[in-house]
Every structure is written in structure tokens, then in C-alpha cells.
Length: 444
Ligand code: PMP
Image 1 (cartoon, helix red, strand yellow):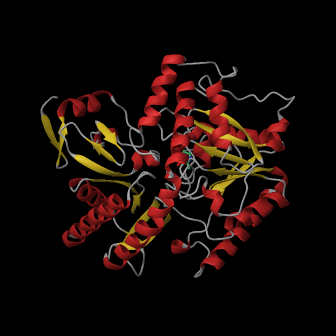
Image 2: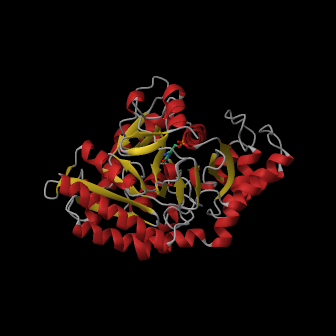
Image 3: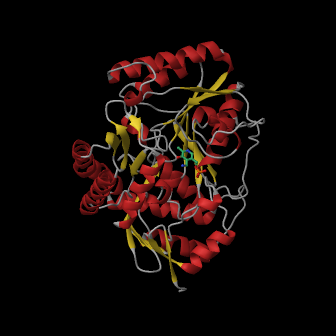
């Protein structure tokens, strides 16, 4: 190991930092201002750097290591598959791929019968949109402001945050506001009112756009990057009704929310709704080998029985990714990992964060479910004005200094540990966050 170096108060491995700065171009960053955290290894809910500093991983990296780091069953399955067959063309039949598809569909509603495998979440969204357009013969896609669907052609245009860029090749995208009572766009003061008005708004936009032109309503079941905006009871069922009324395909994006994150296999399981298409990635194999895909209803799949589906990817259903899916889902089933996420959310994170919100004046709202929580920080509880970016930087630094790795977005700390997090680790993480908030509040 090269000599350690001080960056932003953290002692980091000099060689890692030098190589990173010289040659790695980072996502979503001004390159000169990237402050990398060195991660050299991990196990379960913990990661560490070369110098032996450990961090409780309350980010799950990018909200994807649902089974935690280095789960031995998944690592071994990848190793075994690599020894047997390390790559394969998409238009071939392979037992591991078939088993992966069956394992996923085993947790999905009966109406979803096929899986199209992609490399990640964004291309899952691209292909879901394409399936919906070809199936309906329509063009437009309605999605939420305050959403994230990926950083490729149509997915980034469907996205409703600052990453959305004009893309001349992505046409027909329309945005609506979803329910978010804390910052209601509908002047609502109660959840039912927010839900009802958001549904009315959505339906009016569909009517004004011309229902015959709308191919799909594309929503994250629980908008994640936008702030863990758990939809109120009845919202998604109401969206389903609108979609049915106008013959529109309902795509639920479960890339972040799926595979245990909410304490359910799929987040929509808690919302009495069955979508036509489901996009997934991340938690399906915890990102051990990149993989994503689209679950397809039998009705939409039948559109392509005789007609050629013009989409495809060289690595669709890559054997290493498929082996990781089979092992990850097997581990989740055998070890009760989804149940653990639900219990930790119900017994530790939910009550612990509610208590933290009472004590910490910076906290405006906490919301979430399972191991999927957001703590929204405000400069003023009455006006709900978000804290300045510098405050978020200070909160992140105060967490890291205590050995807690949080996921920070806008004015929020997302508390998103792996689904395997133990109650004790969850309590420890909350205590560290509490201390960090106290330090920042004192310094303000
Ligand atoms: N959809 C959602 C809901 C996501 O959270 C993400 C990634 N954060 C994506 C799509 C894109 O996935 P990927 O980064 O794997 O392309």
C-alpha cells in the first residue's frame, strides 16, 4: 500500500486516490471536485478502506447491495459459473438464464410471465418504453417530476430531476406531479386529499395530451432518488384505474425499490396494484454482476409472438449475472432477508428515525419503509426551506468521520442499509447519524 493521504479530513490510500484523480471520469460530478471515498473491501453491512477504517454502509453503495457485501453463496455461484461458461449470446437457451427468470417470476404476480434481461436499470427502462410503444402503437410516456429512471436516451428524458437533458431523439415525454404531502403541489393538507388531487391532475394531463396518444404511464413505485416518496394508500391503484380506462400500459420502475428494499419482494406488493411491465436491476443480484430487466405481462409478450421485437443486447442474460441472480434470490428466500428488511424498518429504523426527528431541529420530515428511508433536512421547520448544500456536505463529513457511510441527495440523508442489516447495526447507524446531526447543528 502506498502512503496515506489526507483528503477532506479523511485518511485515504494515496495510490488509489492518485489513480482515481488521474484516470477515472466519475458519474454526476464536476471532475475537479470529486471527493472519493476509498473502498477496498466489504462484508455484510460494512465496507473498509486500505488503512483499516471501517464504515457502516448505510448507502448500500448506490442502494443496491440488498444482500450485503460479499455474500459467500453469491460469490461462490459466480465463481462456479465462470468455471463452467463465462459468456453466451442472447439468442441461446441456457439453464442458468432460465432459472434466473423463473426465480424472479416466482415472486411476481401471475400476470407477469416473461423476463427480458438487460445490463442495468436504464436500459430496462428504455426497453419497457419500447415494449409499451410497440404494443399500443402510441407514442407518449407520462412520468413524474421528482423521479429518476436512468441516464440513457429515453430514460433520462423520462427522469424528473436535474439530470434530465434535452434529447432530440427522445420524443413524447410528459411529466406530472406525484403525491408528496410535505411539499404538496396541490395545496393539500391531508394525505387523502393529496392522493385524490394527484390522481385528478394525472387524469387531466392524460385527457389533455389525448389518451389515444399515451403509450405508458411510467412511475417508480416508490420514487427513491427523489426522496423515498412512499405513495399514499390508493394512489397506485388509482393510477392503475386511469391506465385501464384509457388503454395505457402501466410500467412500474422497481430498479431501486424492488427485491426487498421496502420489506416486500416488489414494492407494489404493498399497494394493491399489478403493473403490465416492471423494470428491475440493483437488488436482483445486489449488483455483484451488472444485470437488469423487464418483467412482461403475458398480454404484452403475446404481441411479439409472431412480430419481431427489435430490441436486444449482446450481454442480455449474461451467465455470470444470471448465476448471481439465482444465488441472490435463493439466499434471500432461505435466510428471510426480505422479512428482515421489513422487521428492521418496523422495529428499529421507523421508530428510531421518528424519535430523531423530534430531537433534531434540522429534521423536517422522515419517511420510508423497510430499509428505505429519507431524512429531509430543513433550515426552518415552519417554512420547510431546505438546508444549504454546504450543510449537507458537513452532515456527510460528520457521518464519515464517525464511520457511517450515508447516501446524501439534495437536502436529504437517505438511510438505506442492506436488507441484511441487523437490528444492532441499524441502531448503531442511527446513533451515529444522531451524533453527526448534533455536531452540525452546534456548528451552525
Ligand atoms: N430507475 C430507478 C428507479 C433507479 O433508481 C435507477 C438508478 N438509481 C435507474 C432506473 C437506473 O439504473 P442504472 O443506474 O442501473 O442504469
